[in-house]
Amino acid sequence: MTSGNDGTGAQGGRLAAAAVGEGVEIRVGTPSGELALTCTPARARELATALGLAADEAESARSQAPVTVRADELRRGDVRDGERAMTVDSVRTDGATTHITWKSGPGRSWNQLYDADARITLRRRGR
Image 1 (cartoon, helix red, strand yellow):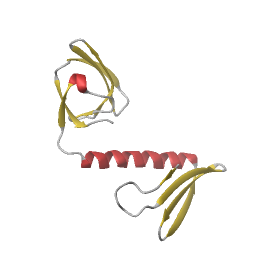
Image 2 (tube, rainbow, N blue to C red):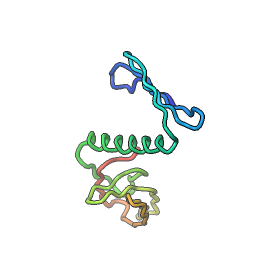
Image 3 (cartoon, one colour):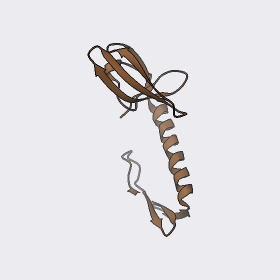
Image 4 (cartoon, one colour):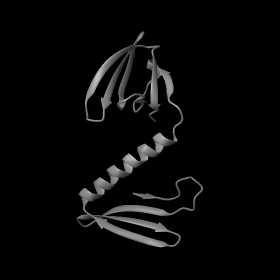
């Protein structure tokens, strides 16, 4: 995997990750030089997880006020506003009823039925 300028207008650096033998090499290049790190696959997965969580937090901080949508407009990845995080896993509308499968952080999953025009407040829209 390689990455260049992220579109923010900042001067582009380079980020690359590749398998090297039994390890994973991460290279970071900037206009002032390059840094190379080698780690185990397990550590690389930990880093990927930490990056994903940090990206989620950054997106969440960037988002404005919660948005309210009709139940039949929900899409996979939408996160419901409330005390505990619930993410839309799937949506199916059958006439005037919308079937939503939710997932929670601890890995639980459940289904709920809503009127298609029911208003659902979201913390963050999925992609």
